Image (tube, rainbow, N blue to C red; front, side):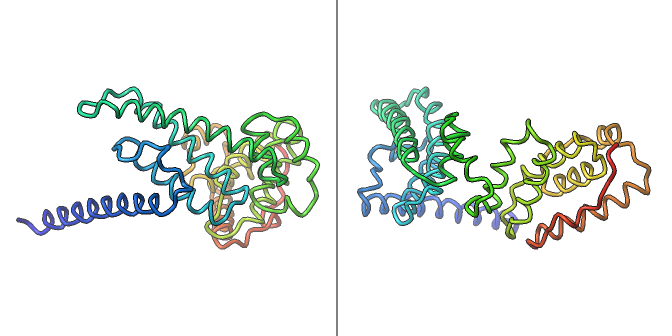
Length: 274
């Protein structure tokens, strides 16, 4: 057997062993923690194993830290699990006659659990809960409660400044830009929300700040965020080569600062509207 084939097979065996070990650990976690209510899930089913495992382990974390952020994360994981179950429930099992029924029961349970999370968050009093209810359920009351917190310390986080910016996107482009930049200023290392770059690129372009829009487009590309093709960028901006070179250098410096958690809005040169 060639060395490279042996290495490949060894890697596959190690991966499978890790997979079985993960399943065993999850089953043990469920057994030791009845409060996780794993019996409401399609346990022992090969379908939806990954989202189910992610959900179970997060619920274990939620038991230890029952804050609103973790409840919101549970909602996202549960929604992914439910989406998987909707597909799995349509599959006709070959050997196990009750498997389809268990998948359907788990699907119903997931829907009920999603509603329970919403009900719990409606009783909460955090900006995260307000924003979640506003953005996910369209609650105008939650929107009003969230906006009343503008200018207070509880919204002085990268996540909440971005959330606030989403409200002003169609109302005040200049303020949207300010909030997005402040969100980046509050962003720690390795915690970058790449949606900020796309929003900044489109917002500054609408403001007529084409050079700055190009900078944010380049920063977005460095984070592998889908942007326009090179030919489309040429049509959008149409700078001469020396300008592109200058803006590329600025974008690189900004990208380094964002990675290091040292970005400030003052790093953006002042450009004239075009």
